[in-house]
Length: 406
Image (cartoon, rainbow, N blue to C red; front, top):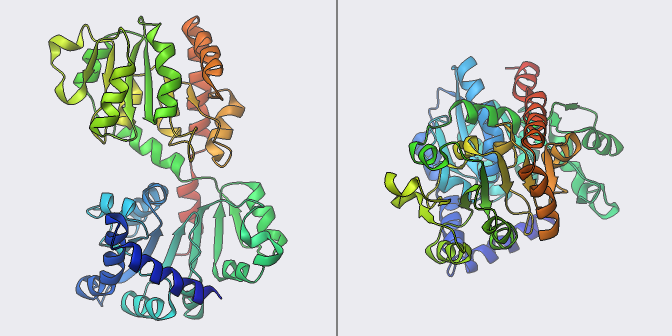
């Protein structure tokens, strides 16, 4: 049944690729993967294979890859992606020796792929459970590790109709999971090789903090003022925080929207009534002194921008789910986000420790912000809790690599 579903999916992708540029890139990349491997694989080398579905999973695997490369240069690293949103952004990542798409999980593709690369071990990041790849790896006695994985009762593995597919989990040598719930769920279906180590994203955000850029434009804009930073915002987020902040012009505002398109940027600027707005890419020093809103109209700066904020808002919580709250929290500032955060353990942790604040509407936002605007002590206290939470959750990378037999 699984293989029939894969072939039907393959047909669907082939059809959709005619109309979608993103799907077309994935379709071509998957078909070219074996050719890329044959051209680049060193037959004398030993490869460790890391697979990430997309960019978020890559960021979770990155600390492991970089530490492995540092401590064990005798291994080469193969990095594969399923999604173009990961591959296209990180195809030139210098921490891996070969980067390509993962061919779709047919028996033929899995055999050809593994015959070409012959990995000595494999790391699957978070949610990746490819049936044919995993069964062939197990048959070849290749150690396979699931890292930063997290399980919930509503997943197919724990339903009566998914028990057959759940056998794929027994192909893993060991699971390095994020929490006790995951370990307990796996135990219920007979999987005991499980360790709770947390999430490698905490290690990654500390790396990002250490490598943060100095941003003279942002420094000149902030210039000692209290500053609100909105990161990865969408329209529903902006419809909540912009009206409130329009009436509090003593605070400066930095908005780094998730979608940086001219239509969206113009839409944001049209809502900023009574505010002097400047765009990052067009900013001149003389403008920055009087401006009260800075709009970030380029990529790659957000994790460094949070450093200049007193309070952060992380978008996505009124849509498919919040974006990276840890990139803000690591700077010891309180983090506000929308209601769709239940699947994000780091958001639950921030709420529990008092460093994160969930809002459901404009009234909630006003209540939280009023507390911060009226009290520097409230900002400092919540920020300290947010930063402490991130620091206490680090160490997953070291725990995994000290346990894995290399």
